[in-house]
Length: 519
Image (cartoon, rainbow, N blue to C red; front, side, top):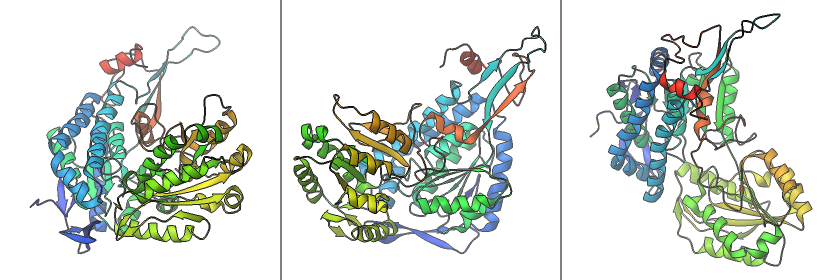
């Protein structure tokens, strides 16, 4: 029996002062697990905030090399304890082993790649403008610009990614890489996975000599802990992945603060895919297979799962729909993440049925579902743009358009999206489509599906509102670190200057960067 399980991690201290307890639930059976988890009290939250602030003041002065070693050591610790993490991931989410393996590998990779982003100097973005004391009529000062950490960061664990967007996720990894301390508000749907993850990170932190409070992990099943965290002046940034309602509720709380801070919220997206007549005529079956598989993936419980198809009508459309129906109807029922998510999915499907023609209604058994396929024409979609709203789960709506002009009219009505897609033939003119899609989304996929987000320095995972609150930033890839930094310029400092606060040329990493060995 793990003596730390069920308790809050306040730095290196565990605490369970409150009487409010909750239980993780097996979504396959709707039965609770046996361990009670103690929701953090206001006193415990305040202690976590105090420790996090103190830890930040120490952590931000630690040499870059030590920060890099810390991040890499986390990845190694996770790999050494993969079995227990995978076990609880599957038990609490209902997701299959292969999905757990993929997400686990991604989580480890994120800590490694964010370490590299710092180690190479990429995340620091050092810019030097040399002095010119001979310039007339006034001398030119030396200017050195560098990114520094903003302060303690609060991260809200996501329901649909118990690893990659939670305690082991990209927000935590990128905030630590930036030089910030982190307070995680764990998601109540996977408390075992989150708590064990936090324990491993803290073990590494202690081994690496990191300050007490570099990571705090707080448990809660209601909004009170999150509210106290985001409204506290010691918190300087917030990371969130979840629903539009959840993200906007947090933004409202932050707006009540005396000091404004940034909320980096990744929210809802139906990830529309457009299919031209030529593409559908030439690749009917291929496109149906790709899109069908993307919708089916893990019951559609991805922020990038396609939920809307804008299609130019052709004689092949009926066979395209038939192939999708065949794929959906013959698929095994898949478990949704939690009874609450399942309940909301069924509610949304029922609401949506009033606005669309349901071509195939997926089977349901408890929290297990098959995909549902619906259809509207362009006139219906234009009259009821709420049809585009995300249904979290395997649900796909086809918007049938008579020509490209109708397709573009429908696309112009789209709200902001994380992704948009376009299936088209090489011979087709797509400039007008791209003009619309670039205004609507953060990532555009040509002849492919949006599921699967590569962790890369070239990735953009964030789009116009309401898909995210700040479309300039990404929550995936090296640039995710920038969310938890701010730039500072040093004027009249010589290039050889160094101190405990800032290191320039004396740090070999910075030397390499400034000499152009990293672009």
